[in-house]
Length: 202
Image (tube, rainbow, N blue to C red; front, side, top):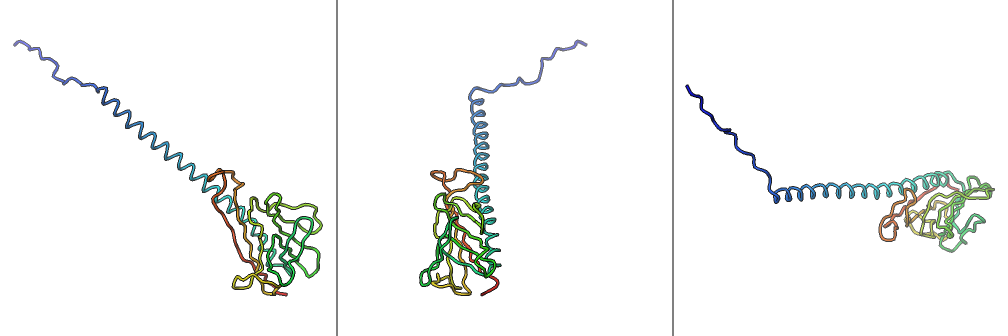
């Protein structure tokens, strides 16, 4: 019997056209660009969130010590002051100012003073006998930091025994971590406000 020669029955493979290659490349490029854009957006949002959390942590640490010192104090006075000195707000005038002087005992000394420094817009703390101050919070824009209020939130004009100290810090920029947020690199808005009352009344 004679063997018959059979040609290769497999179909020939057809190549991609130039149009198909270009379309596939364009789609692949769009997918890659979308993934990169999403990653960059995620990193930016992480930076903003981290900055806000950093500001919150700084403010929380700043206030925590102050709250404990006010609660344990014997005398608390609202006024205007700096590292050099402190002046009480006179009776009959609204008890609000840039500084707060805390006395742990009924003696004039020792004292703890918190104040807003207009020169560098920092919130600072100093103690009796110290020739320097420590920075508690940075980039504070409001000059009236402390208010003495009653239980309804009305600013007092006297040193009422059961007064409440209102602390308000308005941040206009973040120091840690340094992140450019919004036009001009300023933080859009961040405010910390709390009210503190002493445990022991006079």
